Image (cartoon, rainbow, N blue to C red; front, side, top):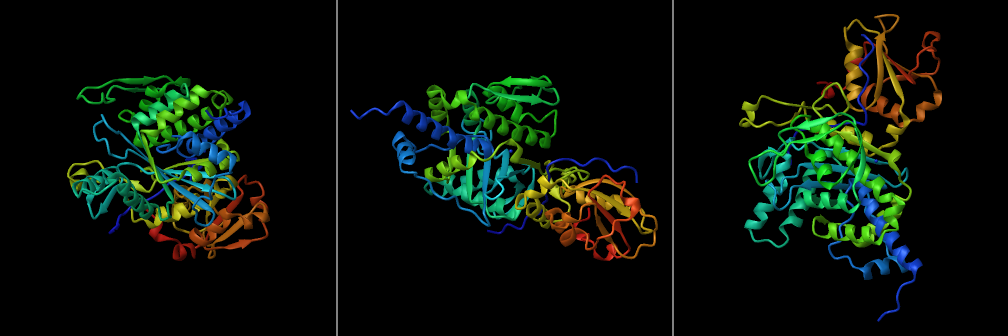
Length: 470
C-alpha cells in the first residue's frame, strides 16, 4: 500500500506561555459472583483503554465458565512489552456517513509500568492513499465500499485491517488490535451503566447539532459543573463540535472513556446481574474487533493494576504553541473547498513524538520542568526552542537571557544530578539539544525552580533539528 502521507503529533498538557522573553447443577452463589466479576473485568479493560467495554460477538456463558475455571487467558500480542490498540467510532446504521471514522484513538498498554498513553488523531487530517486523497475519516468507508463492490467476504473486517495499517504509517508504531464501535453501541453502553458522571469544564450550547436522518438541527446544551448524563447526552457531548473545536471534542471523548471506566469499576455494577446482562447485549451487535476472548480475559487481569492516574491523554492539534501542535489549516481552495489539516513538514515529527510519549510514557510521569536561556546574539532563540520542546510535550516553563550573548557551547545543567538517567534528559540530548551535561551548577541558577536549565550557545544553531522547526 502506498502510504506516502504527511502529518504530525501531540502531548498531555499545554505549556505555560513563556515568561517574557487514563439440568445442570446450578452454579453456587460464589461461582456466579466470580463469573460476573470476570465479565466486568473484561468490560473494564476495554473501557479503560477506549471506553466501550468488550466485543462479545460469539461470547456465551460456556466461554466465561471455561475462562474462569481453567484460567483460560492468553498473552497479548506486543512489541517491546507494549500492546497498541486502535479504537475507531462510526455513526453506524441510521446515521449519515455511517462508516465515517469520526473518532480515532490509539492506546498503548505498557506492561512494565502499567501506564496507558492515548493519542487522538483528528478526523480532518488529510492523507494521500491508493484510494484517493481525502480526510482520514473517509478512508475506512472508501476501503469497505471497494471490498463490498468486489463481493469479498467480511468487507468490514478486511477494511479495518487495511485501515489499521494506514494508522500505523501515520504514528510510526505497530498496532496489534483494533476495535470499532458505532454511535448506538456507545449510547447503549452508557445507558447499561445507568449513566456516567463527568465534570463539564465549560458550558456548551450547540444550536447546530445534527438531527440524524433529517436536514434539521437538534440543539444541544450542557451546563458547566458536575453532571450525571445518560447515553444520549453522552453521545452528544462526545460529538458536538460546531461551537467548539474538533480538538476540544477529542478531549471530551477521552474524558468520557475515563468516566465509563470509573463507572464500570463501581461495586454496584460488579454485583448487579441485570447491569451485566445489559452490558452483554449492548455490546454484541455494535462492536467489531480482532481480539480473541482469551485476550479479553487477559486484559481484564491487567486492568486490576491500572487506575485513572496511569492513563495519559494526548490530542494532535493545529495549535503550534501547545503540545501536539504540528498541523495547520491550509487555504481551502487548494483542497477543493474542503476543511482539512495538514502537517507543517512530514510524519517524522509525529513518529518522534510517538517514540517519546507513546513508547516511553514514563516521561509524562517524570514531569521534569525546563528553563531555556539564550546565550547568543540571535534574538528569540530561547522562545523558539521553548515552543519546539513544548510541541513535543516537554514541560518548558520559562525563557530568558544568559549572563552573556557570547556563549559558544550549549550546556545543560541539572538541579538534581540523578536526573541524568531520566528519559526526559536522554531524549533532550539525543534528539533536540546536543549538549554537554554540566556537573557544577552556577550559583545564580540555584534560585531557579526548574529541574533542567538549558543554556544555548552559538553551536546550537549548527546542531539543532531544523527539520522540526515550523
